[in-house]
Image (tube, rainbow over all chains, first blue to last red):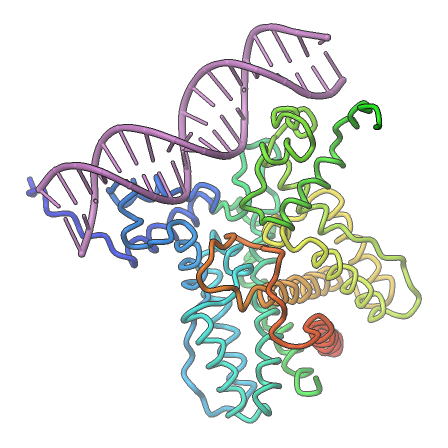
Length: 205
Length: 205
DNA sequence: ACCTGAACACCGTTCAAGT
DNA sequence: ACCTGAACACCGTTCAAGT
């Protein structure tokens, strides 16, 4: 039998990882400091040592996590840049549906805010226009990406069992099997079409 | 001095109204059954008589409220129909920023779901195409509307005081005075431009 | 430096009881 | 039918204390 190995030390990263797992699996409503402590084999109060502002700091960190993306600069023109950021942003949000409400609602901070600024710079240098117009384009693209993921997640919980202790506030993960075949691919295709429409129309904005 | 008049009887409508007021003013996090009871001059437990599923039912009702819009059928073609729904949807969401997280996250139900279906029918009869394509267009438009309001609300809390007991999860209403002049009009114009881009590109989707 | 235990003020929800 | 009071299990957070 294996010796009881010394427990992995707590860390901001491990806390966030565990919190995402709980939120995705049971819903944001059930993400509790005490439950989070249990998942990490630690008393809830230990978390405050790594996230001094407590649950508020945790929520901020989760939003930042699913909202921070990086994209290598490309040389395919501003539309290619925009596509890359849109795809990366959508993928990051879809990975953790449980914290989508935070991602759509909290003002961008830290690395997430830096990513937004980098996106604007990349668009500008790829020929989109002056910084102000690039920043405006980023906002439009972010709106489309965030909204698309929102309706996508909403639909995944659409045909929820009518009589049930549902999860509230957001993401129940054991989503009922889709109402149609391959809804993920369908959603991806729809996302692509709307994105292209936006990219066609953006410059005249 | 006025005689102590008999208290207005509790009702689903009054409960929802008070809940929206609390969520908009203090944030969703502070919307509590007990606080809601106080606002209604009633014990918290009385609310359960009108909303049997308790807080879960309240959240559903709030999401439905800010998400239900009606638009008179017009004869200006499908683009005019789409514009009307987009404007109405954005206005309804902006009216109650405190519950935006619910609106973006809860699957549409009841009257909200009916409104979505009516939007699709109006688009189809206004010449957009067959029902399936109209439904797809509605999803794209809803995504854009919801995402636009999300970034708009996010930005209203952007320059939040760095050292402060912030509200969590969403909508603090005493938003810090804008970082630029007339951000609301700017946001409205940006919304318009993105919407027109989408309307130009939609049919080819 | 990092974690625990006990404590405090507050939750959501139930249930029997009042009117 | 509508509301209250007391009770229960559970929150977030503090603080002194342990190691």
